[in-house]
Length: 263
Length: 90
Image (cartoon, rainbow over the protein chains, first blue to last red):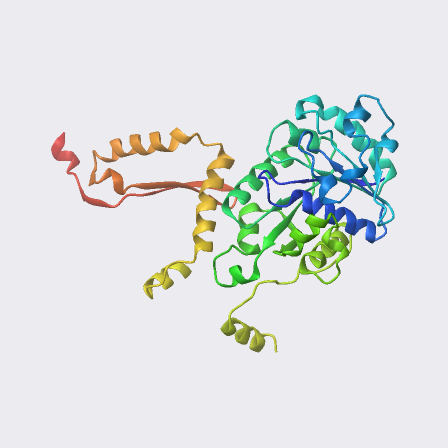
């Protein structure tokens, strides 16, 4: 029996789809069976971010309308074993799907995979309720800025109300340099406000742009800091205990003080 | 404390601490589901009552909701000039 995890944020553009694509791929690279589900009906993007856009034949809408079997709608990612994608319909809108129907799909997928990752649309309306309807757990993605954090707090409230637990935080687009000079909130600031568990910090990485351009998730490039961060999060999702490294770039004085302290 | 020390040395507070402070206030109001007009109305009515006892400028009053552990605290900062002699008025 696998886990159904909804990847959500409230605010758009904070990296939900990038995180879903990378965590899904990372989990498959770790040998897990994974299906990533695009729940953004009408505005699908998980397919193009993963480079699978030319291979979509059926969508979750076709499964709901009984046009095809669920297993037939799953697009196999040929680059890694055990990874498939269930695309969203681009011609429909969010109101064409009921939360109950999403739940039925999730329940079927859960019985056949280790992980089901659902890429939620932005917002707190129907798209979000559909995406979270069948979820056991949640990953909330936020960036360290005021609007993303405020929206994340709202989403966390809704997830708690729905009884979804645990809710883990991914702090995305973290800039060690900006945190170091006091221009960006650090993880402690963010956790102090949001009050949930941190599952990982993904540093700002320009590699995300080029990997999205190519449709090859960043986790295939071992050396990039973003890739390493996503791999660590995936390991934590499988239950491994991996400490979260301190990414903050401290000033010279702090480094000297810490050096003496740690001796 | 951190901020006030910095201000003492004539440096601007870091924008990250301003962000955190502002977020804490707004999220407390979001969580309590406080109506936008609620605070203005409370501010207005409280000022009316207080004006009977103090001399102060309405614009100098600042009010906010804060979360302390599991409870919420209404903090009002009212710089006043002097007390009115309430007994003399009656």
